Image (cartoon, rainbow, N blue to C red; front, side, top):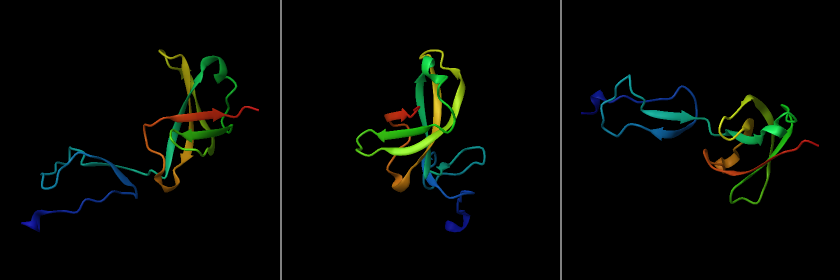
Amino acid sequence: TSSNLLAVAAPFDGDAVERHAAAGEAADPANVLFVVADTSRLWLTLRVRLEDAGRVKVGDPVRFQHAGHDTWDATAVAWVSPGADERSRTVAVRASLPNDGGRHHANTFGTGRIVLR
């Protein structure tokens, strides 16, 4: 019967980006049912060569072109990692990328440029 069904609501607006439950399945408070995320902005992570990382500063302009798109998006460096990746010897640099209309997708690739001069 439907008398034992409860609505599931997220505490904020967003998109369900992962589903770990099926319709009609019993819910358990210890298990995650859905992962909800605000996809209006995405973290853009650039990998910068160790020898160039010292020149990158928070606020530096960033241009990003998503693979398969002709246009460049503009943003700025929001964070520079204090450490380097042990395998690639690169430094992670993050920028907050506007995702107007949902045209960018998480965990995909593109070309990023940090404007230093």
